[in-house]
Length: 314
Ligand SMILES: C[S@@+](CC[C@H](N)C(=O)[O-])C[C@H]1O[C@@H](n2cnc3c(N)ncnc32)[C@H](O)[C@@H]1O
Image 1 (spheres, protein in one colour):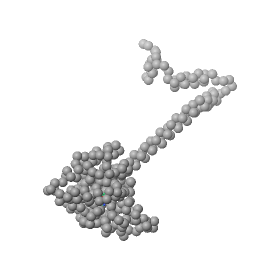
Image 2 (cartoon, rainbow, N blue to C red; image 1 turned 45 degrees about the vertical axis):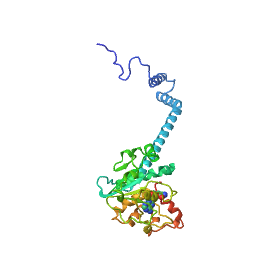
Image 3 (tube, rainbow, N blue to C red; image 1 turned 45 degrees about the horizontal axis):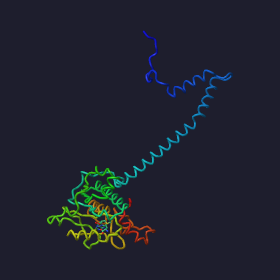
Image 4 (cartoon, rainbow, N blue to C red; image 1 turned 90 degrees about the vertical axis):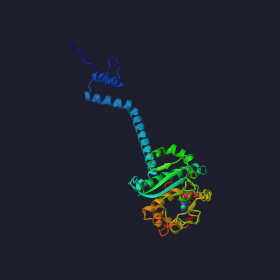
């Protein structure tokens, strides 16, 4: 029977020694030759201190790199959290996702995104944020207000494909790249479509079942005057504005952001079909009549109109 030691489990026979093994051997050798008159523990202490001197720069460098990586990871986490917050704006305020349990309304909203080329890149980003926000509002609404995005086939789609790629997994919202509004309308169903626009005297008192409300999917600071009104007229569609004058104090035309219009429709249902309450919930308090206006808001009327096209998340 052989008395030879079994090979080290991790080490294959004939492998060169690792740097750790070399270091270990060096230490043992040094320990063997303790200088005269020096205790073993003192000798050990000196060797330790010498090793520290030799490796401290390396150690500090390692610690610096570790801290840098930690900082980068924390930055990355913060960025992801911000992106998530943007997408789930409403889920922060209301954690309950209503999808699948919603009360039917028979109402559909369409964001008409055929105006892509009229927006600069910043406005495209803003519009994509508004769609994300509206999707969130849709998911958390107690009522089923279907949401479709038509003409989703240019810059806006590119923005989503590049930066909000999870949109393909979103449920209950239809991104339609094949159809424009005109493809959906026939002589038979025309009367069931209403194009929402601030540029009319026709007031929408209530949202009717089996009706589709079209909202212009554009951020333009109202550069393109009467854009949606003209389009609706060309298509021969009914138009209507939200009863904003009753509840909102603004100069000039009462032009709202696309997402605000959709959120207002959701809140109208949730607030017992009361536009006043819906406006109160969706728009900043300083804009709603009867709400206390902070001192600094006095004389800010012009800024208010511009702000109305820009949701607070932008
Ligand atoms: C930012 S606005 C677009 C402004 C654009 N210059 C226009 O002329 O339509 C976005 C969309 O929200 C809807 N909207 C805005 N204010 C509204 C209001 N007071 N009543 C009804 N719809 C409104 C319209 O459908 C509008 O196209």
